[in-house]
Length: 315
Image (cartoon, rainbow, N blue to C red; front, side, top):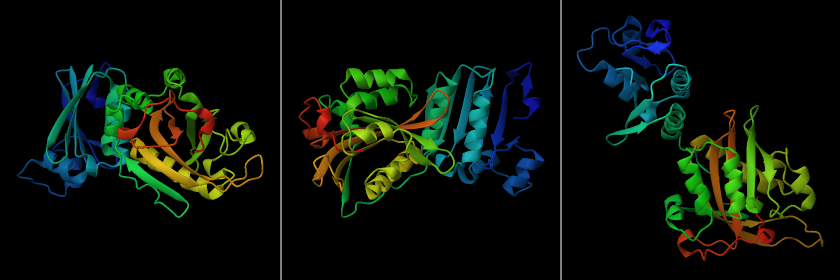
């Protein structure tokens, strides 16, 4: 943001815009009118730029509330990054209101910059297509809202944690997974920034699908490098899709695992219930938790029995 907009580190009452490519401009300025392509607009030029050109309107009201107005469908990443940078600067207000256009205008208010940023990225996340089912791997998408309404399903508690913490990952997530008997069923992925490849950061003790050696040696490996490479590539695409969308996935998966168990017999087809959640770590890194239970049924039909870690065969 231009230095002229700050006085002794405190943002004065103002209205300013972020362009689609992340530049700050004042309404009515020559730069804004050039971006608009109209030197003499006789209409609401700011509203037009927000609705149609992916601009974000940034307004501070009486030094108390920061208001951010946008049309999420048109907003590009550079504009979001500019807003995130501004909100994390010293001197920000205590309350933040997001006004966004869907079929109609909506308004949400937050008490922290961190939660505001998380919600902005959620609103503007592009729709990411998950990999299709194949002859060997089949996925049946489930309703996350249905899972939240099913008090008998232990996966519900992690979804509630993700929502109430606005996707911020800390040690309490692992603690909750442990007390809920879900830690053995959990895998955590990080991402290789060079090519956006999901990397195993943690593999719970219940994941015996690739043998005990891989449970130890697999940490730090790319997901694509599972012993069943075709399955690994398929699973990795789901991780990328969740990372791109910023939204959880709840699926029933049926997988024909072409691995050899310790007795040398081909592993059979496995069916499991899987919850993928995207998180931001303390340093801003992107993490994905995958929690799965075998013998899967949709949330509304789930028996609610405690999961058995040793039977889990998914990723």
